[in-house]
Image (tube, rainbow, N blue to C red; front, side, top):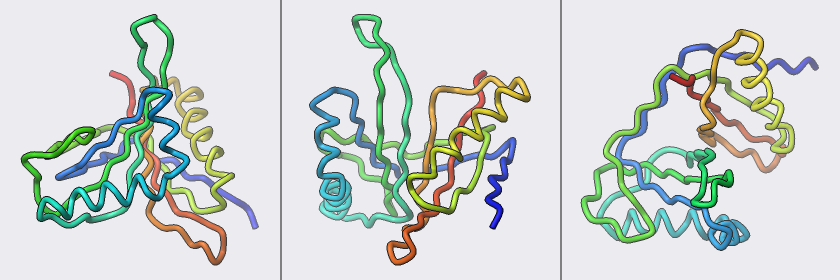
Length: 161
């Protein structure tokens, strides 16, 4: 069966009542060994503040330059809640609305190891069509079918301004 990754050229990602957990330091990335626990803790934090988590997990990856001028990867996990939480505890932050407009977008369904092809396709379309792209990528994990070993993810890459 042919595998086709279709790219849409102008999609908007809008997240509301978003609880954010940013990982940017080496010791932060060590927490990824307990990924499930990390996300469960975010959900518990939302519930402890009288709200309920809604929708799938969103992962934002980006690059920034550290104080030594070295590139540094930043991973931010986002969980939406049904209401805004006014006082969140560190290391969390809360945003009422995150709107990322004018993105290249694709929906990927397949084995997790093959998801790199969707990211590469978005970068290739940007290159071929001379569309400057941001270093940010937003991945919305729509579904995980463990029985068949596939996942479905919506991937957004904002265009650079």
